[in-house]
Length: 388
Ligand SMILES: *Cc1c(COP(=O)(O)O)cnc(C)c1O
Image (cartoon, rainbow, N blue to C red; front, side, top):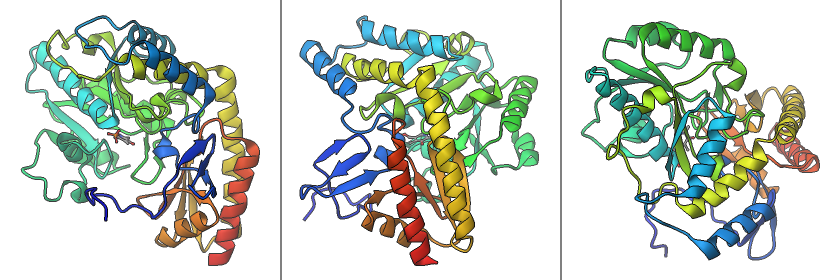
């Protein structure tokens, strides 16, 4: 019997080892892992440079309090700011902490400029910003909040794509709009660049902040460091996590100098956030995934993969309804429930994970090889054929 709380519906399989794109069971059975901890292991399993970084740092220093200077964190924050819109960074340990800290930053900013009533956050209904008590109410999903009342106030919602309702829901008390540029859990729904541009204009006009939750879609997953980069807009606050730690728990909130002005000493903290061990890994991940050559490769290979997936869709239009996504954040939307399809992929040694709207999420490591993609395509084609 298991002594773990049953808050997950776990598959009856476990792994003892991982290498690159593959996972191995105790019996040595090899699986192509296109879950990668849900877009977390951006460089696959046991990447030699990450293994070295964590080994070396673990011999020196794991953890010190944020009461002291942490040079490894200074270094990572500087790198992030040099590569992005951000002026300042605040380290956390996970996505939910980062999105909640983003909300705190937005509210505190308006408080600090003497507009304390400007504190409401406008989000997409059925989005995903994490599982902590405020984040579930930010996500505005009945399923996630059921039984966890009383309701946490301060959040308003509009439906994805419903621009009229979005405009209507903005009031003088709205502090920020928080959205995922690509909805992950929600079914890999991409917000187009023109839409992001309009959203930025709207926020400027209404003097509200724009928070882009890049926890799942960020850190080079879409072929640019942030998924919103091609839109050329500048957000005010960006929470990140998942991919930046390459498998080690690490999150952060990135922000402009302007909005950070409210975060004076004592306003926020995290015991573990930004510790030297996490920083050593983060520094190594960012050096690899933000190089031009690396990004170009993600772009090219993911385009090839998406093209091939669309071919499979065209061969089995009664099974596959849509191929969605950008870069290596991909969704195969089926006409029907995806459970059997995912099970069959797994029987063929390909691991994938579900999302809303009958979507199968495909999340290869960013350094996946072409022949591994071809292997996955073959399996997806085979299963589509079997279920046709
Ligand atoms: C996963 C995710 C989160 C929450 O991250 P945790 O590390 O699980 O707390 C928040 N926002 C988005 C968009 C995510 O995909």
